[in-house]
Length: 118
Image (cartoon, rainbow, N blue to C red):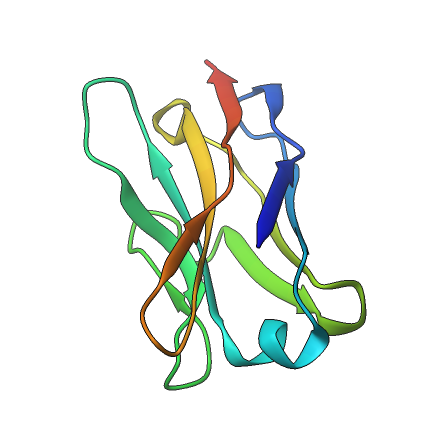
């Protein structure tokens, strides 16, 4: 399994970015069966959940991003996308996509940097 994250960059406060996580070396049925999520890690802080598709169904968001970020998926492209609107300086972090198999094996993408200037 390989996860390629992209879409990070430098943006002013109030701006928007869209992150993508493309999965490879997995078949479609595997992609569908995995749970998917985005995490972020700011310097000196722990990696925390931002948004995801939990195994129980639906979507979940951290309180910090609820109403501003939207996670989506395109099964045919094996891609997870997160649209981030109204970005704030406190959203600055390295963003990682995470895939988790039903057996609880976890895979991480390489991270994409998001920097929001005030």
